Image 1 (spheres, one colour):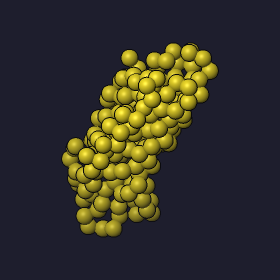
Image 2 (cartoon, rainbow, N blue to C red):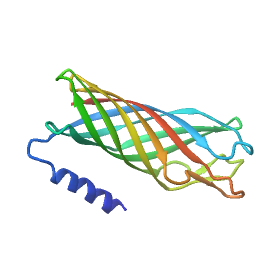
Image 3 (cartoon, one colour):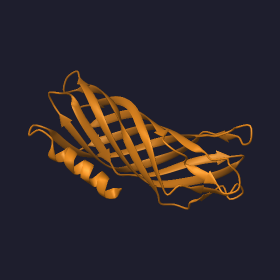
Image 4 (spheres, rainbow, N blue to C red):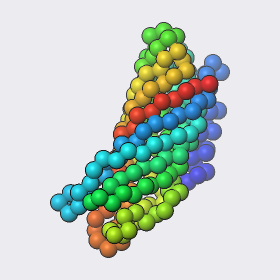
Length: 188
């Protein structure tokens, strides 16, 4: 799986036109996690977490097309019946984006793409419920935002899980962790 991802990134970079711009930056943000499962059995609430890491931003100036690829440390938090759990991941979002520039001062963008996540923390979540996190996850991002002065980007991303986040060891009560993300990126 890692070889496929690295091959995809290499192909994306090698197929860029000569006038493509590549910038690097630092991305940080806030996760708002919403766990979905049968709430008649268990109740949950939204919880905050954070993410941080380097980002590569690729732009084809005339077409308005581009991509951003990041490697993020992601700490998500969920709460079930008063019990907190922290889930730690290394995320690899690969988003294609379309940018509408108003001038060199500001632009808007829309982005979508896959996100791969690997669990790096304790995989036993909610000791009393005996949940186990999946070691890796696949999800899809949809988002947008704006860039100011070609350096500062503020955005929103909705992360849609494409499978269960954790499975219960005893019951059939699996859950999915949907994330709303608000992020700030500084491009060098």
